[in-house]
Image (tube, rainbow over all chains, first blue to last red; front, side, top):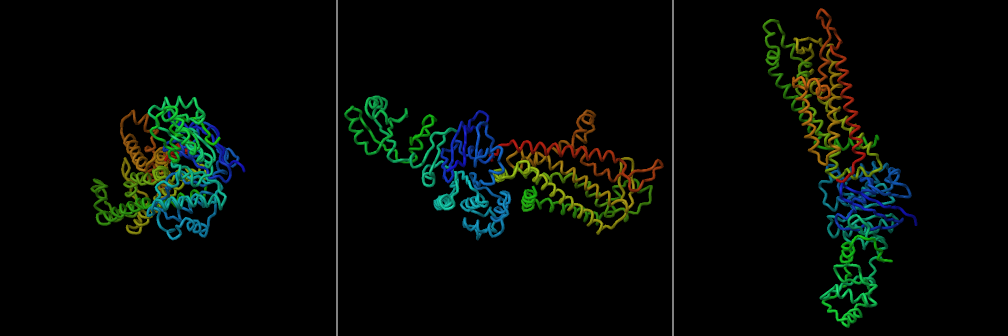
Length: 310
Length: 293
């Protein structure tokens, strides 16, 4: 398996703001690679740099083994993208929009191919309708058709479920899985929702304030046997000190605000029993199996790189 | 490049806004033609003033297709830049505000090509607009009012251009107007590259034209000496030069001649320099620009 995207020490600074800061990651062939971060984390800036819309302040991007800055034309021929909202020419029909972007992608698309593409996203019957009459979901589907019309090897989807209803979100998820499993495409999909990434991605990166927090296989990063357990006591600092003297010390999570341990949930009763023996009054035990809890626990820490999986 | 140009033309001519200019021009010219059809003689009497008392003038011949077209162009060409800005000011910023610029710039086409294709497509629009003006103001006027000699007012009096010496002058006048309008298009393009919304470049272009025209027209020596020679508006009305006919020392007009040809050529050169500088600046800025819209 070869690397499709290799990003090294990528940075982007807007005046005093470091939108992306020394970011490195690798996307392998066939990956559905989740790009996760809160709003304003730097996801869109990173993705725009992958698409040459924004020039990096520092760092390098290699796609298909070629340097992006010097092989832009060749690389972008094999890339399809939906960038944030599916904004298209509203005064043109779905068919005309698709024909324009097919041409811009360097392919000679005949009517049959364009109609097939529209059929794939369920818009063949609205081919002649102007985009301004479309719902958000229909626009998003047309955006997908535009991204796929030239049969790209790499597909980049920036927040593809934004503004979609539950059915639209499910359809988008199925489409991503279809593209990956049936057609062997490499896909980068960004989102601020971990639950979305978990359902489609095999590998992911979490970024926060422009920096990488964690990168790895989704199955390992979200391994339930390594849940984060938060314990509320009458005095968390004192409890932490006492636990540092026990066998649980190695499991203590580096979080100054809360007392958290990375541990197997089955060991929780034993931990509580021992805390009682240590005369630590336990007020509550909160297993952070919620993905959002996990995500927040990582992004609220100091932005150091941590491999949860290793 | 040809693909890009086709796409840009397709986009321009699919926009309802594009046809607004054609409709405005048609309505304006038809109004003038109607007015002159009804009150043409009175209008010509007013134009010639006291000459009526000293000369025997056949007004039915003076109010002809060429004269009507000349009158239309005098009134209209000052305002056509607004209609050019309406389209040219939107070509990049319109895409930025619509959100399609990021899709366009993420495709395997160079940013230089994108800007050049947009400018060339605007050139086709401007050409079509001037052709439309020519057809309605010249062809229709000739059909309605007939063909005859053209009387042109100059600062030192009137001059008569024979009917068979006029048509080629219109051909070159429209060619000159095309170059002048392409300067306006280049200004709009540059402002469009710098902006994220459509209205800003359109209003700014019109504002620049108004300010520069006012400065060009002001008879203040310091402006005349140091600023006027560098303003594009100084050269934009050079099309009129094609209707100033050369004459002999005896005052006889020379058929097929142009009185101030070097001045016209200088104006064309100045306008071309403006075009090259403005389009180059647009390309340079767009290549460097981070697309955040």
